[in-house]
Image (cartoon, rainbow, N blue to C red; front, side):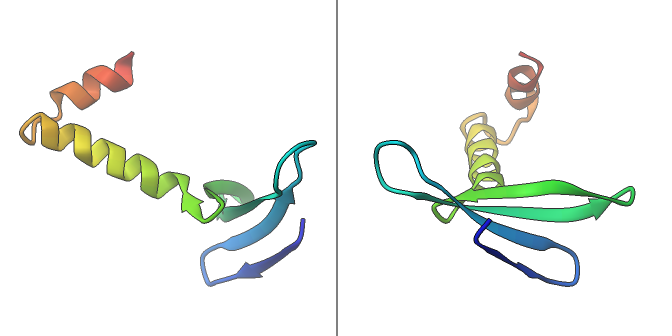
Length: 78
């Protein structure tokens, strides 16, 4: 852990992963409280939010299908 910050609804824990080869990787863990315990809400790797990336991917899939969610549901079931 390299640091952290908090807001009214979440806490961000910053960390750095240092692989045996290559540059260190910055990872931010956004945590929220659910049922009295901290739960991971999002992970940002080198500033790229996994939640936002997934949201964009889902929106693109729906758009390719003309706004129909059938393909999305079929993909999620697989």
